[in-house]
Length: 285
Picture 1 (cartoon, rainbow, N blue to C red):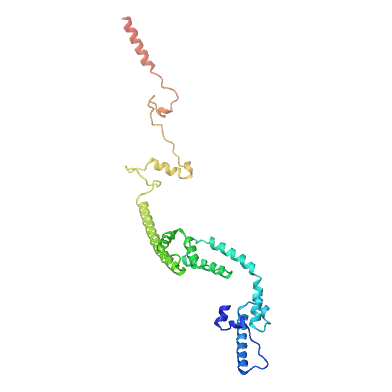
Picture 2 (tube, rainbow, N blue to C red):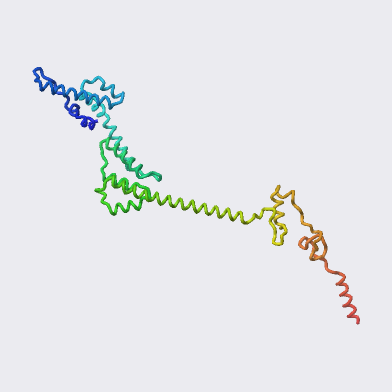
């Protein structure tokens, strides 16, 4: 408000007010009083224009800008203790403030600046050096390289927040460009892989198809079994192996395999008896 009063050249009406006109005033004094009264009304108009409806009720009946301004000073002086509490809260928020992963440099600097202005309104301003140091130590890890470069090449005591923001935004732009190029390369590589995989599937037939054949042109037995088992759990199309034409290795009989026999094969008694008789005849002679 004081900035607005100073720009409109009515700040003296707020601080000093109007000098009362005497009974024996000269023409010059009357002219000056008239000019001061005009400036006082102008200052009072600015106060009425800048306050909300609740505060307007407090100063709506005031005859001079100095009286209206005094009412506001007394009202907000009682809020001094609350201002100290708010200042401590803002200072704690300022120390804990960190840049988010998806946040840009401009957005983060704006957040820090806004919080610094809130601290200033409570009676404590943030210096340029503290502002620069705060931003540098609270950036995300992707800015570690530029932070080290700034700390080594720049004087942080004389560096302004505008210079810091310009350097960080330039580095951020380079990182974004490289990230976009990398993303495009990954998309192109994935597209090539999908196309190659698609061609490979179209070139080689699946083993589960009915037309899978052996090298001799006949349909394989495994293919027939796989086809039968894929339909209804393999119960309806199951065909048992025909062993009626298969001969046992041990007994030379049809209808079973050697591993399926539970008893050992009997010895050939006829051959044994024949050999025994030959031995007896030999001894008798």
